[in-house]
Every structure is written in structure tokens, then in C-alpha cells.
Image (cartoon, rainbow over all chains, first blue to last red; front, side, top):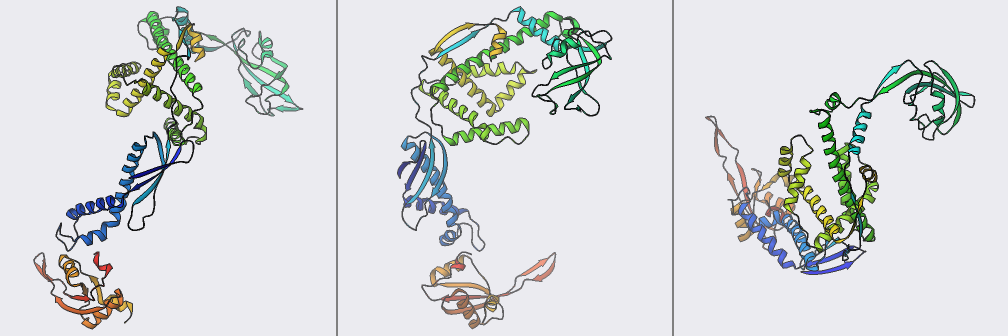
Length: 426
Length: 98
């Protein structure tokens, strides 16, 4: 077998492989002999079909098959011989064979880029340190209460925090907008973002009041004809609603399906926050590590076929999640390139430093993920029985291990911050 | 003799272990032919269809087999078989593979 490699691009190679014709002929006749024993033809006892008839009937077909096989296997062999790290084979093409002689084919390949020694010791990474304080729990519970806010109509003057339902008609260039009826908005006094000038006007208003003012509509206003314009407006107060936030008590806890009252609710909330915190910290560190690596080795050439494959995967994923036709490939390109680069870098770190998957960590990872479900045992069972899921977890774990390794070897500084700071950052 | 007539005379090649042997040993090819075809008909048809030189034609009538369908006796049709020897060195490619 003779192999010659041609460089056709940065990462593209064209490989020409010569396989001696004899060995192919041998393989073909071997296969035909085998066939002869099995084939059943009318007029012949099994196994007694003369060779020339077999040759005539199956010769071409068998030769094609053998050529395919030979191309595959000798390509592998050639790749091994050349010590290339192949990202993908884009084309494989047999040269037409004129009767006798050696068989030749060309394959177009893409190789992974030469990886530089990955140096992390001067990578600076901040590790957030966070304690969940009682105030954080309070905040979270306040948010929960806010979600349960109820509105009910009142017949008094509008106050801070009330929701005022308004009908309005704007006048623009002598035309009424809308020309029939009125648009409706329902701002909450004190939380008005788009029309700060309304606030004063509405405070103390009664149901049925009519007012006139001038409003500046934001660029992204939902009625196109008014967006970005300033116009005199006639307002009518249709109703005033006051809100009520539920008290933190047994009933409140129960409405979240928590048994054991407020204490238990607080404990649950805290547990959830702890988990969120852990995740946020890992994410943040991971982000920092990957960003650092990607930045440092950003000029690494990427094999197009690997990127394309990644794009296809992302598209498929999106299709599965949304059930819709995914957007065109170009939208994924940047993300895919990033992922491929990271994958290469992380794999390279693992390779250079002999990091291998720790099965104990895989185990605990699965358990940790299962914890959030109702029936952890079933989830664990599912992961065990599904190799694809298992692969995913293993990849995640390996990634984590690599990141751990980077953390051990990089310059890590602790930075204490509050929970809200942490969440705000990520 | 036109081509259509030739195809009517030579119905189909007959391929079996025996005919494979004959092909190899004495360059004879075997065909199923019309029952009323004469040796010279067959010779001309084979020469015309396969562009070979025929040296000799031997024919025989194959008797139909007796078969019964649910105890009702019946008979398969008989047919004429022709052994055609062609000039050594020539061959009929079409017939070799079935």
C-alpha cells in the first residue's frame, strides 16, 4: 500500500492511496468462492454452480463491495500510518481502473489543527464565594408573594401602588388615534416605566375622571402609528384596582404544596437557593475557564466538517425542542465554532494531562440530577439503561474534571459576593 | 428469416449443470425451441441472433410430465430441446449467465 498526502488547505488534505491489484483480486475470488457455496440457481445443485457462471452473475457486484471495503479499511490504515488526527472525510473517490494494475483512490480529509501546549498556570480566575443569608430567603419569599399578588377593584381615589385602568384617545396631526373607540392601558402608579408624566396626573384620580395631557410614546410602542411620537391625549379613568400581597402564613405555604407551614417553606426555599447558588458558581467558573481558554487559543483553525456536524446537531436539537423547522445553518455557525473550539481545547487538556473519567463522579452526578425529580430512583434507572444519556453525563463529568484541573493549576482568587450579585452576573 | 421469427424459434436458453459441462467440453449450447422447428431453422436462428457459426444441431422432443391435480390426471406440455454446437473459439456470452 502506497500513500501520498497532499496539502490542499490549512486543514484540508488530499490523500492518494494505492492498493496492489493482486490483493483485491484475491479478495474478490475468495468472496466469490464463498458465494458459490451458498448460491442457489435453477438447474444446478447447491454448491455445484460453475465458477464462470458465478463470476458472470455476481462478479461486478462483489468487486464493488470489496472496493468499498478496501477503501474504508486502507483509508483507516493510511490515516494510522500518517499519524493524522482526522476530523472528517469529505470525499472518497476511486480512480477508474483500466483492467489490470493497482487500484488507486483519493480521499479528501480534514484534520484537527495542531494543538499547542495548553498553558493555564497564568490564567486568572475568580471564584465567587457566597453565603445564603436570611435576607436572601426573605427576598425570595417576597418574590413569591409578588407572584401571588391579587387585584381587586376599589372605589376610592387612586393611590401609590394602585393599578389604574385607562382608556385614551390620542390626537395626531388632527386625526384621532384610534379613529373609533379608545386604546386601553393599565399602569400601576409608582411603577410606570413608559409614561412618567402620567404618574402625577393619576395620583388621586377617581373612577370616571377625564383628563387631558401630552404623552411621549416610546419607540417600541405596541401601536405602530403612535410609536416614537408626542401627542395630546384624552384620558378616561375606567377603574381603580388595589392590590393585595398574601401574608406569609400556613395558607401561603400550602399554596405552594409545602406541608409543615412557614418554617418548612423557608427551609425549602433555602435549599433551592443553595442549589441555584452551586449551579451558578459552577456555571460561572466554567464560563470563566472556557472564556479564558477560548480567548487564549482563539486563533486555532477549525475543521469545517466538525463545525458543520455541530451545526447540524444544534439544528436537530432545536427542532426537537420547538418542533419547528430550525433557522438556517448560518445562524448557528458562531455558536458551533465556539463549541468545537472548546471541545478541542478541553479534550486536549484531558489528553495532555491524562485526565480520565471518574466513575464515582458520574454516579454522584446522576444522583444530583435525579434529586430535582419526583422519583429519583426511576431517573437514575433511566440514565443507567440509556447509553446515550450516560454518554452525555460522562462528557459533562469529564468537562468538569478538566475544569477542576484547570482550577487547580490556574491562578484562582476568591471573591466574596452576595447571592444577588452572583445571580445578577450569570 | 426476420428477427421476430428467430425469437419465435429460439424460445430460451436452457441452463443446468449438464449444459454448463457441455459448454465447457464441446462448445455446445442448449435451447428450448419451437416444437415444429427444423434443424436448419434452428441453425439459421442461432447464427442470426448470436452472430456465431453453427457447426451442428441435434434435437430431441421432451415429453411432458404426467401430473395430477387433486386426483385429476393431467399432462404438462412437451417441448423440443436443441443442442447446438458452434465453432470452437466462439461463444455465446448471453447464454453463459443464465
